[in-house]
Length: 417
Ligand code: GLV
Ligand code: MN
Ligand code: MN
Image (cartoon, rainbow, N blue to C red; front, side, top):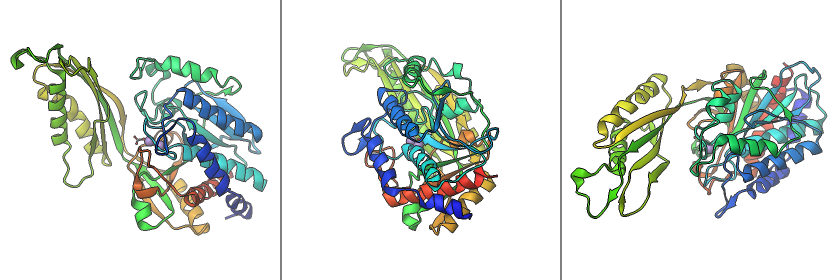
């Protein structure tokens, strides 16, 4: 490792990085140390403004694209060179924690500051991105910002998505973009020379193994569907069973069939119904409509395709009296990260004397989409008991700083290529 790279990595300031997590966690704070910072909400806007205020203090250039992905750039010596990118997301789950996503943004920003303080010059610019709507908790699907940035889906296709209150994404996005008028416009598909995302592991492997750095090898496949079951409202006390078109009963039948489909003695297949909207949602009225989500994951591309293909026929077969509509909202095949980026991360961990191991990601990340357009990798740090998507999510300041050091070194390696 070059001396100036080691110097920059060592300038990562654990206290400053921790303080920034605490400051960000106040935006959308909920009880028990939790965070509710939905994509394109007022809280998201405040987080964006805070990040921009830090960027301005450093004179870093700021840009934003049409889906609200926010980019903070430390210039390189070659103005024509494509940037090396890092980052993650600032939106959270409705009952999320203080680290999922925001760690990758703050670690990236810390890396830029450490580079500044070490006075290193890179050939390529180094850029931190805060992707819009990674979680997909408010607007589906998840990883939307990176999906649109990389051209995997056109912006027009997601503008009419609505949240649970009927707010359209296009309106929430317009309000978010209007809140940061001084960011320069940025094109989709702007070239990137590489992308490294830092994230808490969201699982227990690193903690159990006593290792500080996870060198991520790839991300398992993911498919999302919305299933709508339509029947009719009736009186709960008077309507005989044979006359009912009960959307809740049919939804339960479909979910039971999907549980059977995805039953896996090896516990590799993941199946979750995490969102359910019932209309009219009254105890003494038979429900006329249920919308629920399906989240399916598997590391094997053939298996995830097979499972995904089975969803619609199975749902139609399981429903007894209602109409069923199945809408696929996301299809991500498993991705494998770039060998050179994996190598750069591993070398950085070795040189900085940090215990590390390779591991795959069970959770999805924006790195999945960046891997389609440039050499990509990820760095994991441990989180307490592997708990995530939960207010109790926790990580140690020293581990967060260690991950940011590895990130700084690996970014510098890529930025001088
Ligand atoms: C990201 O939060 C995911 O759903 O994996
Ligand atoms: Mn995340
Ligand atoms: Mn998440």
